[in-house]
Amino acid sequence: MAETRHDWTKEEILAIYNKPLMELLYEAATVHREYHDPNTVQVSTLLSIKTGGCPEDCGYCPQAARYHTDIEGNDLMSVQQVKAQALRAKSAGSSRVCMGAAWRNVKDGPEFDQVLEMVRTINKLDMEVCCTLGMVTENQAKRLAEAGLYAYNHNLDTSEEYYKEVISTRGYEDRLQTIENVRKTNVTVCSGGIIGMGESSEDRAGMLVALSTLNPQPESVPINALVAVEGTPMEEQKPVEIWEMIRMVATTRIVMPKTQVRLSAGRTEMSREGQAMCFFAGANSIFAGDKLLTTPNPDVNQDMEMFKMLGLNPQKAFVKAPQPNTVEAEDSQFQSLGEKPRWSRPGHSIGQNEAATEKGKAKKLIETPIENT
Ligand code: SAM
Ligand code: DTB
Ligand code: SF4
Image (cartoon, rainbow, N blue to C red):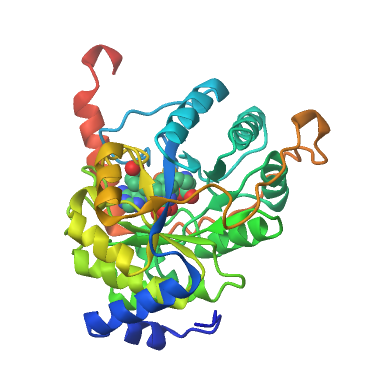
C-alpha cells in the first residue's frame, strides 16, 4: 500500500510531476486503485448562495467588486430557495451540495444564522453539505459542525510564494489558520487550488507540498483550471493544456493517496478523452450542474452520458465518513460571539490587479447614466 506521507519535499513532488507521462499515469492509477474504486466518482453541485460584490482582490475571481465583470450579483438566498435547489441536485444524482458565498470571512449575525439553517436543511435531506464562505474562526467552525456540515472548502489556491502575485487583501497564513480551525471539529477539509494563473511548475509543486504536509491531509482536493473571465486581471491567461491538468491530478493522487481529487473548474474546455485520462490518473470527483458559481460547466445530461460511456457510477453520500448530526438552533451549545478577528491584510501592490481595478472604474463610469452621476 502507498503510505500517506506528510514530509513531501518540493523537489520530490516536482520529480513526480515531470515524469514521463506513461510512467506517471501508471503510478497514479496504481495508487488510486489501492484506496478507491476506480469506477466511482463523487458528484457535487455548487450553489452560489451570495454572489458578487466581494471586497477581496483575488486576481482570478469574477466576483471581486473592484473588477468589471458581467456577472449578476445577488444577496444571500433564502433557506427555501436553497432547499429547492438541493432537491433538484439530489434528483440529478448529486450526493453533495457545496454552498459558496462571495465573502472575505464569515461574520456572526443574521446572515450566518441563515447559512446555519441552510446547512441543517440540506443535511436533513441526507446529502453531504459543504460550505465555502471565506475565513472562519474556531467558534464559527464549531457552529457549522453542530448544524451538520460535512465539509468546509477553503483553497490555498497556489504556492505561498505565488499567492503574493495573485491576492493582496488576505494572507496565506489566514488560509492555513482557517483550515486549522475547521480541523478542531469533525467537519472534513476540502482544500485545493487553481492552475493556469501564470504560476510555474515549482509553484504547483509548492501548493501540493503545503496541502500534503497538513496532518491529516485534506479529505478532498479540488484542482481547478483557471476560468479566465473578462474584466479580471487574468482575462488574458492562456488556457491550461489538458496535459498539465492530467499531470497535476496524477501528482495530487500520488502524494495524497486517500484524498478525493476533484476535477473542478475548466471542464467545459476539456474533451471527454481528456477527462477520462484525468479519471484514470486518479480524479474521483466532479462538480456537476450547468453552472459553477458564476461561470458555465457541462450540463448534467452530458455528464451522465460521459459516465455511461466510461462505466462510471456516482458515489453515494456518506460512504467516506458518517453523516453528522444536526442540532437545532434552539438546542445549540454555542453562541454568536460577535468576534472581530484580525485576519491579515498584506496590502502590497500587484500591478495586474491594480490595472484591472482602474479599467473597471473607467468602464463603470462610461456605463453610468448621466442623470445618476
Ligand atoms: N469567498 C470564498 C473564498 O474565497 O474562500 C469562497 C468562494 S471562492 C469563489 C472559492 C474558490 O473558487 C477560490 O478559492 C478559487 O480557488 C475558486 N475560483 C474562483 N474563481 C475562479 C476562476 N475564475 N477559475 C477557477 N477557480 C476559481
Ligand atoms: C473550488 O475549488 N472550485 C469551486 C468551489 N471550490 C467553490 C469554484 C469554482 C469557481 C469558478 C469560477 C466561477 O464560476 O465563478
Ligand atoms: Fe471574494 Fe472568494 Fe472571489 Fe476572493 S475568491 S474575490 S474572497 S469570492
